[in-house]
Image 1: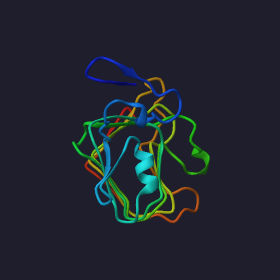
Image 2 (image 1 turned 30 degrees about the horizontal axis):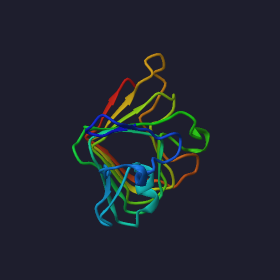
Image 3 (image 1 turned 90 degrees about the vertical axis):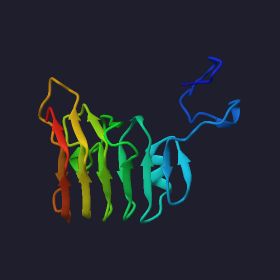
Image 4 (image 1 turned 60 degrees about the vertical axis):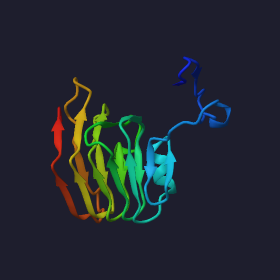
Length: 173
């Protein structure tokens, strides 16, 4: 739901909010800095990214799981620890997927608060090398279940190496 300065409400009814129906321009809080293009959803920015791009995410709460399959992608919070990603249940953890799944080499995730209620790893690296996960806060928000893991490197025979995990905090895991 978006509210304009006059107090009028515009609601997404299950599909993408139709920007053309709004009497004002919305600021898109997810920016691919290399393409100079904005998005409302992080996954949409990832889907259109090119190798080596940087996606900067502005302050706010973003819902949904992420699959990062773009080599050399940097996903960073514009204001460290002021950007929340709330993952959803229902990802395929038995096949190496998590709330955030890294499927490409040379990926960086930096500066987010990542919240998850599912009892599985928050971040999975899967067949990926040279990954950096830094300055994030990974939090289990299901206080009844502490079986979660913060980061799982590889799955089964997945080929993962040179994974750097630094400056993160792990809460209720």
